[in-house]
Image 1 (spheres, rainbow, N blue to C red):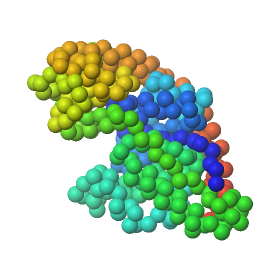
Image 2 (image 1 turned 45 degrees about the vertical axis):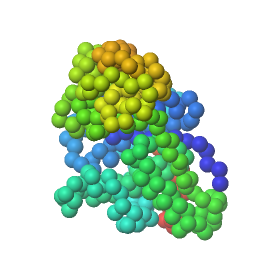
Image 3 (image 1 turned 30 degrees about the vertical axis):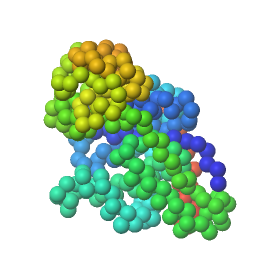
Length: 343
């Protein structure tokens, strides 16, 4: 069965958005607008799998929305909304709780990482959130999802849930005139070379908003002076930059900074090394400062402007949610018929 091509992706509103979020997700969202119909969701229901201060959560939902728009996502051509305004996410997640198997969720590595040693004390939501993630995507029968390496396992689970639903309810799907399969098996859109941005203090760790050192990351709201200072202080090694990518092996900090430059300039790492290889880090860092400030400075400034207008952001989210709801309601009407609910 042919499904209309549609991209869905979401970003959690939990604290400072940083360069890793921008290069790993938001920059790609902007590029995908030109080739696909897109839904970009602020996944606030995922955020509450761990406790959030309600006032902070509101602010962070608006901040992520501001980042989407400041980076260049057009909320009039595509749909930008927050998950909690569309009740179909929760409703379909419950149906999927009854389709997915415990064994599948037990294999999810992210739960083990996030719950840590005190697994018995984690919320049920944190355990079952891959089912909600599947519902987010399949509520719109999305065909493509831009994902980083760390989310591939969740997308595979989404495909398993879609396949099992289609198999379990095959006769009912056909009887309702909905073809051979109701849900597509969404395909990943894997990021380019800079999908993983590492800490500026430790090239072996991912850039993270939970790192206690603010010097480890470039926040999207950082001004030009702060961006420049963090790049100058970023950890490096005493060797000059190599001229070949092979020479970056075993040099995680050098590889990270070259990767960041390549992603911001939209070129291959090899091109960066051809330009700066053999030279000192100080020269390369100065060029990286100029590039990062030129690319990120305007986004940070526009974010600050938008965040100062919460009513404007809320209006964008309301409009997006209404358009998302129209698609979601159609899916849920069919799901209720397929499952055998009376409506």
